[in-house]
Length: 198
Image (cartoon, helix red, strand yellow):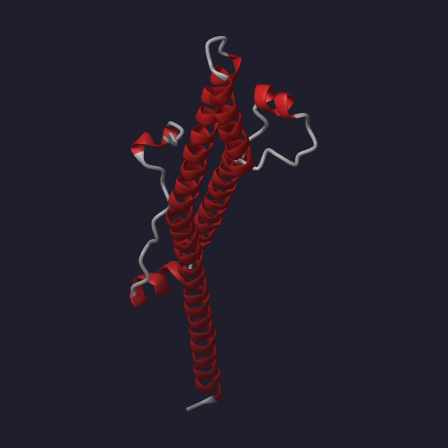
């Protein structure tokens, strides 16, 4: 083997090493991107599970407060009607007053520093109102988290797909069986806002 033969052999070996290095680098890059997609999908599922666990519990809690406070307001209104009645006896008015006081105590209205009749007539802000506001905030926050995780997932899929489809990585991807990853797509009916019912 002559000098030219050794140069050609050296060039072939160098080319094979470069090609092998590119292939190995492409393969490792695809593995990293695929794992990033899978990791981001796990975050989407995490937020889905959080929503599935949290929202029904919050809705039920708010429903519970609303029922209790509806009962309290009904008792207060009934007692107030008896106390304002021109036909009620003094005993009935005292009984109605005691019932109103009990309802006000159970609702946490007494001790708020307001005159009694002002509280009765104004029906102070109830706890269920705060619960409804917290529920609205939590729903908005949950949907924002979901949207953020879906966006990050789609971004990682885009990066993976772009890497997978570029030359020479496309050759390595086809030889090693790397599959496309799906983008997160909204359901058909998801263009309409979901309705929360009580």
